[in-house]
Image (tube, rainbow, N blue to C red):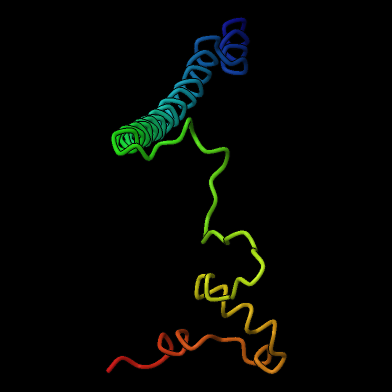
Length: 131
């Protein structure tokens, strides 16, 4: 009868080894997920470093070419500017000195009827069917 009680106690209480095995399995799963994530991060880091290197090489090449041509300024520009440059306004200057897009904007602003249909003619060519 005493042996029966001991056997029941052994079955009812989880073994320390069983608990350790369960914990070890859980930690192994976490380690596998972390390794996969580390591989993704390493790949992204490699890609970013390659792109950064290419951009630095391109910048150095452009600076070298500009300095050979005598076109380089004293240093890098204060900021990048997109689009066309608008010349400083001088008395008597006409709109013909502006880029075509700016001329169209001024014509729309000057003519309220044109504001009702502001699409420029070049846009109609984009909408037409190819021949």
